[in-house]
Structures are given as C-alpha cells and as structure tokens.
Length: 392
Image (cartoon, rainbow, N blue to C red; front, top):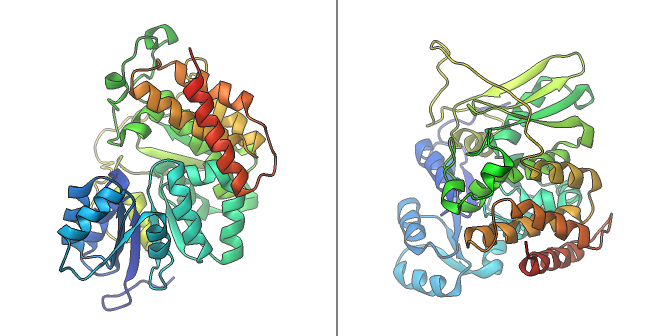
C-alpha cells in the first residue's frame, strides 16, 4: 500500500447527486482534503439550482450535469464565463462519469434513478463509491457481473457496508461465518403496531440519530432501509442469505460487525457521521485524517443491542425474503417502496400501509429468476403502477 504524497496525482471525483445529503458531505470531505488527494471533477443535480450553483462556484469542477431541463437552462446562464462544461440529462451524467480523466464516482442519487449512473461508470471501468443501494437491490447480479467484466470496482459508502468492508480485512472470505448489520431502530423503536396506526409524515421524519433526505428517513422509520441494506450486502460481499443478520443498536456507534468461523467478531466503531465512510471510499486503500468527530473511549459509554421487532416492522422480513429469492423480486420491492413512501408523504396512505402495498406489488409481479436489465425496468414500472392503484 503506497500513501499518496502532496504533489502526486489527484483523485478526480464525480459526485452524482451532489446537492443531496451524501453529496454535500462528500464535498465537505473534498474541501477538508484541501487539494492534497481529491478534486471535485464533476457534480450533478436535478432541481436544487441555488445549491448546485454555490457548489460549482466554490469547487470549480470540470463538469456539471443537470437532469431537469428548466434548471439546466437557468444554470447555463448563471454560470456563463466559468470554465466548465454544463451537461444535460442522462447523457450528461454518462459523459461525465465516463470521461477518461474521471477516477472515482460517488453514486449518491436517491432511488433507482441512481442505477443508470452507477451502470455507466462501471461500464467504463471506473471505481464507484456506492451510496445508491438501489443499484444492487434492483440489479445486484448484473451490476456485479458488469464490474468484474469491465474492470470496475464498487466501494461501499453506506456506514453499515463500509463497516463490513473494513472488518472483512481481518480475514479471508471463506472464514466469514456471518455479517451483522446494525440499525438504530428509527424514531419508533419500542412502539407497538397500534401506536403506529396514526403516525404522521412529520413524526416519521424525526430521526433520532441521522440527518438524511425524506425518503431515506421514512425507510429508516419502517426498517425498509435495513431491508434494502440486507439485499445490498448479499451481492456486494458475495454472501449466502443465511450469512446476513440484523440487530438494533440505538446509539449508532457500532456500524456493523463480521463474525468469523472461529467465533471472533470484528466491529467498526465511529460517531454517526457520514463523512468517514465517504472519505474511506474516496481515499481507499489509504486512511487519512477525517473532518468528522471521534469516539472518546475515555468517557463512560454504554452500547446496547437487541433483536428487531419483526412483527411491528414487517419490511425487514420483506428484505430477507427478496434477498433469498433474487431475480426480479428486488426491482419489485424497491419500486413499490418508492411509490408507497411517496404516497405516505403525500398523506394518501398510512404508515403501516407501506409494507402492505409492497407485499401486494411483490405478490402480483411476474417473477423471473434471471432477468435482463430491460426486464428489470419493466418490473419497476409495473410495481409503481400497482402501488398507485393499491387501496388500503
């Protein structure tokens, strides 16, 4: 392992979804690096025009890609005179990530919309720092096969998968007994199903530990976020379904654990701050000082672990079921959940209706164990339509 020194070539980073929570934290990591190792080479956004403009002026990337046509026209006018290429739509995303000078791509667009950018980057043999778990939930086997065939690489950004990735360096793949993903339990840990019947979107958006976008925050409240992470872990680390487990850990200090066949359990600990896993994925295999806080083990610290309440939070069982089935099941679950969360945020359905709508979409879709990418997009569209029509 060779550490980079000042004056060595910079790692040029394209951030897909730079205006979101992960994207903003990624830019904070790059700013803290102060030009030693990292450069913001490309940024992308949709409608958050003012945020994207400020990012472009502060970081002076080579590219900016805007997927909303109206925002693209306005940004082109606002950034006139700056030395950067302003690109539009999905073609702009593809050109940016496949640029020969692009070294790493931080894939942070929320939802299945992030799959295209991840796919394009891997097709060009790039290293992808993956925050878009949906890429593997929807198309895990296809994405991993593409990475292997084209010489690309996936480095995890989710704190749980980053923790597993780091802990796995303590042994060989054949020595792994299981991986244990931790979950904060969200804002409703300890509540009964009866207590959750009248939950409002505002209540569900009050996460006790993490500051995230609305969709991911609702997923954390239902434990769907953990369900999707279970599926992602299987494909990312080449695991069998019975090698993945989940425990509730409300402090969010232990981000995940790996148990080896000899009984040793290796855990990764750090405060709940996304800058650490983002930075590790951008600078890997090197470790460098991080702008985030640190765990102070000289002070009293209690860590608690408990099994998840699967009866109250059935989304987790949906995740384990889909992980075991593979095929088109992941595309159906992910699309159904995105549609159901949107309906909940719009006060069209209740909190407990989210897993029910997802169950209906999974049951009604035509399962294929070995789908093509085109088939997965069709399953995605059909599942969304199913949830739009679904009534409690």
